[in-house]
Length: 66
Image (cartoon, rainbow, N blue to C red):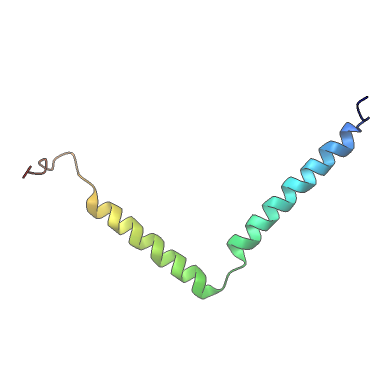
């Protein structure tokens, strides 16, 4: 026979688990030192510059084939 389950308690338990997961993600994202944030910002800028440098514009001629 199946176990009787209180749906309100199950919903609240699931909401608490989701809230805890979100809190853990926020702690990981915002609970860092200024130097770590600056390193991440520099890394993001470097990646953006690398992608922008490799971008082919519509008016650029196609690359020559060797």
